[in-house]
Image (cartoon, rainbow, N blue to C red):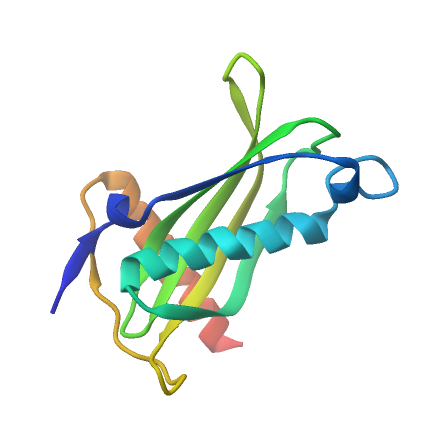
Length: 151
């Protein structure tokens, strides 16, 4: 079985908030953020699996702070769990100030499944955990999976 490191599929996306991305309160529209999160999660999962992927669920989506017009938004995705055909991706979203400092505004966990040409699930590489933080995130992902299965 093939294995990959967390760093092998790390993905970033940058956006500058424009009027078309804002809600009625002139803040980042949550639905737009969710779309960006889904793209970053898919790119991360595709990099890990070398396959097309589809979204299974968003198990956690926590809005921590708002973002406003002209803010620079940075989305960072990394894999936290790899099962037989599924992968859990963490996407953290930040507002990046002009001086380069960042503050987190959202964290999301997205489950993706790798699919083959027949659009059926296919196996994905295992995940090499190199740090204590990666192990902690793996354990948390397993707990989310267990809770989801129990429902």
